[in-house]
Length: 287
Image (cartoon, rainbow, N blue to C red; front, side):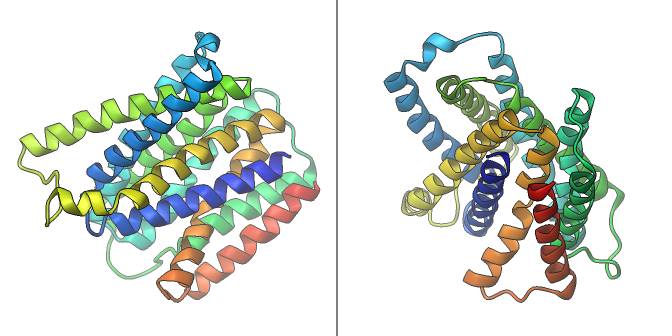
């Protein structure tokens, strides 16, 4: 069950990243984040009211609030790093955030078997290579590397925090709701500050473009929420080390989606990475 839910997480995150990437070509990134998360808040709020999840409020919700603060900050750092580029370096470095939940899992007592340890190493290497790292070409600015590492640490921290936010299904709905409300508050504040400094809050074409993109924005927001939920379940069902690595295969999904929808050709290093990620998945699942 751990492997199943973790792989579902990687699928959902990969598709959400792909959809978000397409949307940011037309709509400012912060606006994409805020609007998609507002939609998620509305849906989760309805679920929380329908299930009576409010009754499970407790101190563990601070983990969810922490994830809600760290998530938008990590995303902003990641977008800034992508702007500085080169993207072929930034993307795979960003996936190194898996080290955070894996380290947490080892510290709290997870002890994967020999095959699973091998699978962890192979899968992480595959994820990095699937991003298509540029080993030569344009020099990498130190700021881009630092921002990417900050983003990676943030992404990994969100995985670790959300895994601790609830122990029941209804409690998980409440935790995800709290996380998304915090996301909106933090992201909305950043968007307001950006507009005050002269940044764009709306795309060319104005609110009509955002309204037309609402179905896609809803998909991105809800897929991201679902991914956080399936990851939390995966981390509770089995070793966090295994769940974290399998959930971090999402760059492979994004690359394959770009290949299937946008007809982008996979570079040899990306194809090799996808293959290694698959091998690592098999080792983790059978170990």
